[in-house]
Amino acid sequence: MPELPEVETVRRGLEQQTRGMTVAAVEVRLARTIAHPQPAELFCVALQGCSLQHWQRRGKYLLATLTDRTGVSAGTWGVHLRMTGQFLWLPESAEPCRHTRVRFFDPHGNELRYVDIRSFGQMWWVPPDQAPAEVISGLQRLGPEPFSPEFTASHLQQALQGSSRPIKNALLDQRLVAGVGNIYADESLFEAGIRPHTPAGQLKRPQLERLHGALLRILRASIGAGGTTFSDFRDLTGTNGNYGGVAWVYRRGGEPCRRCGTVLRRDKLAGRSSHWCPLCQQ
Image (cartoon, rainbow, N blue to C red; front, side, top):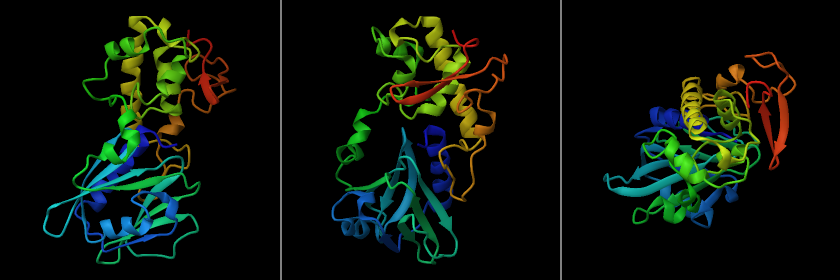
């Protein structure tokens, strides 16, 4: 599943390529992609004629502000890519592939195409008189953004106090911090020198400070690299991210640690793979 750096890379691409775009037509090829409104035809009617304005990211959600022909607010377009969703910008419309789920056209025939192999991604239209969280319920369950002032070592200490679940599992909980998933949880725990199995409530303040700093550094590095090459991620041009080639531990179980040479472990925690170094992480 795309995580914060991948979704942020998509957001920046959408902001650059589609800001100010007028949606002349919408074609929904898989109705269940549209979570709201129902039926899917109402989604098409709501977006047709609107202009795309600023794109925002909240956790792993993408949110576009819409205006009508007179510049008045026309609501919000929300997107969650889930596991394999991706947007492609096509200056000249081409025959859609079999995984094409929704197509958006501007008045000049350019196409913004949404492709999703596993078809778990969702889209919402939020009316202008409602807040996005009123319609997109997942937004209500998100914790602070990693780069926000609210996300601190103190926040981690308070939220994890008394918790017996492994710290790796805690980091995947979007209520603790929004946007972090399997890749960057593994990478950040390695950099912080913390084993993924460690009960979250047992971490001391210095460890939490290291983890907080590691999360920010790893996320910034991956955003700068355009995300990772994992999980079928592509940007608007169909290009992979570059972070995966320098990952410390993720998907490297059985290989030597880049720092100490110890064979990396791959364990299952709550059904998810965790990759870690027995020597570097204590």
